[in-house]
Amino acid sequence: MNKDQVKGVAEKVKGKVNETVGRATGDAAQEVKGDLQQGAGEMRKAYGDARENAKDNAKENAKRNAP
Image (cartoon, rainbow, N blue to C red; front, side, top):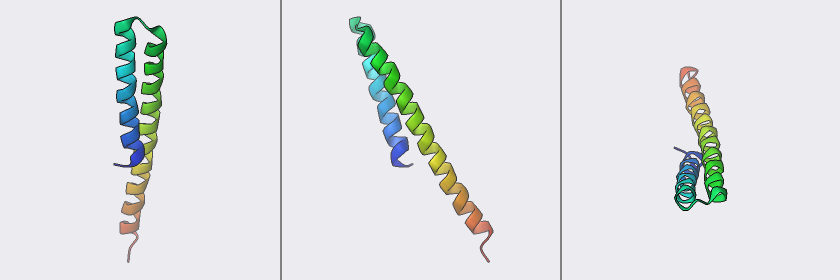
């Protein structure tokens, strides 16, 4: 797990909290902010997942091509 995956999940959690608080208090702006944070968190986690997959594939290819 890399830092982008961790930060992405953390951002999703913060967004969920903001969305829930916004919904509970009737604050539409905070609810939207939470939705946006969740989206940003998902994107960052997806980026981290892609980096991790690329790293794993590179390691696997190096093992296969080793003498």
